[in-house]
Length: 255
Image (cartoon, rainbow, N blue to C red; front, side):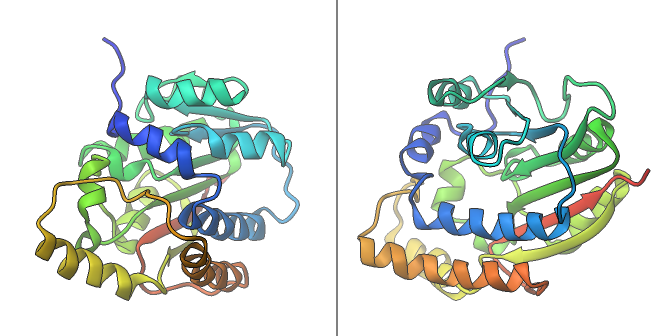
């Protein structure tokens, strides 16, 4: 049976067009790197897996800029076409709920905005698979969409199937066997703006589901990026946020 994407195939083109420079992608990468680097603290990465790489751009950054031996994996042939065109090394088509690698194969597993696209009830299988393929002492880094109240037209367009609270995300990975080292909300400072847009403005417009990845004026891009840069500094210093549009979790497979 052919593998099919849990994300709207039309969204891959939108992501590929903006993920290098768009304020949200730049800011959320900065937050993720600050949190990840704080935990790694010089720990060597022998082999890493990005389980759900999308277009492959994040894996490309890790391979080319950090020289990490990352295997990019995604269920979607649409996303992997962009990854191959970009020159990402060793892309693999596979399902995050049935990862085709041996147990203990990786020192680091990354899952970036994947869980929200899984059908509800499939996420425990993905968590168990991530645990299985990690070596003892290996680290897991997860980012996913948070809080049902923040669902939007873009959520519908991208085929987002679920969002998480901190408690639910922690329970998911603890049940799979991980020791959760840290879990925090992110993209928090812009949450009031998001609530106004998603719960007031969008219902008034009554428009169809659509991508939220349209370019904005350079001044607005800088303005929207600034709160994420502040959050990156806070999270990098160990501060956790009590609510936000995304969740970040670091877990460890105890040896």
